[in-house]
Length: 141
Image (cartoon, rainbow, N blue to C red):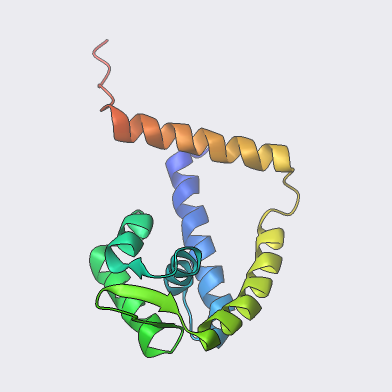
């Protein structure tokens, strides 16, 4: 059996590859999609909030580029310096994309019960908290 890190990397790469392919017709990537979701959920979000929310998904350079993309492509606008909100057109376009993503998510979890999915998420969350909280000491024995 391959270790969990192997499967985490493979899963993330597969999700990104498939999401990018799905979203390309809308001029989006997985990361720009994630930026739009943060902005939709918190209209007037500051760039710093987007970076904080998605910092585990990409580095600062990639996130800044994704923010520029959603503004340049008309999905979002800047009501004030450093703030983001969806445009009316962006909001309408995002609704259409959200429908497609919902079908994608169903395909991703095909054959996985809600209980199994919930267990997987909780285990990964605990592992992350373990690793981010206290350094794991090497065994000496």
